[in-house]
Length: 287
Image 1 (spheres, rainbow, N blue to C red):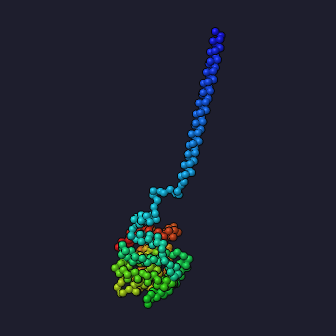
Image 2: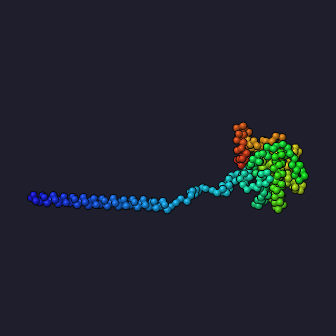
Image 3: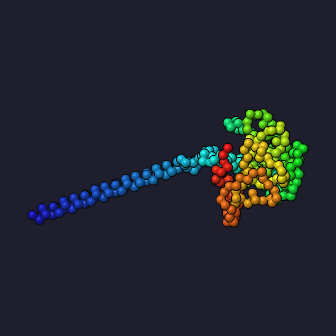
């Protein structure tokens, strides 16, 4: 009886050791396999990360080209707001003389021959702006009185802009004659308009003369170009102090726009001088 009990104890002891050994082996195998899988996943992540490199900034679905942005902007503007926007966003002006920036071109879709003049954009321009004492300017044998600074700039161009403009007008006789300018360019545009009329047969009309941030440049008290223009607009924002400058001089017409004048707004005169595309031009913006 005692022998049987001893055998039973030995059997259960061996069984326990065997189960423990198998259990340990199984556990070690599972841990090893798990470690191997984790290592493979890490290695795969590193491979993917190394092989897939960024190609630059992500392309946004709403990202537009400058041409597309301009087209969208123009759709929201009125006629003369578009005119100002195009003057302000033209970047291929030619420079001649004492920094006179101009562009002559043709719009075949609208059948227009156009000359544009840019705003003040250099120290030389500002220097000439300050030369406000009266000065005679000879245009085809006709004397007009303007400021010394404006006469000096226009004369320095040696008739290059007006020659190019008149040549295109002759090339396209059925197209509209359009003259535009901004700021200092408004004075150049108005001098060009007179020059063009003096070169043209009697009774010639300018189809459009449009200026923004318009400066007063005439000292002649009895001559006005408006009767020679089918459409003339000389825009002056009430809070654009540049349009108030040069006492005793005048403009042919005055198209006042913008909110009423206040000193607080006038402190931001530069903003009002450069944002005519944001002005309500509805009072004047009609044919």
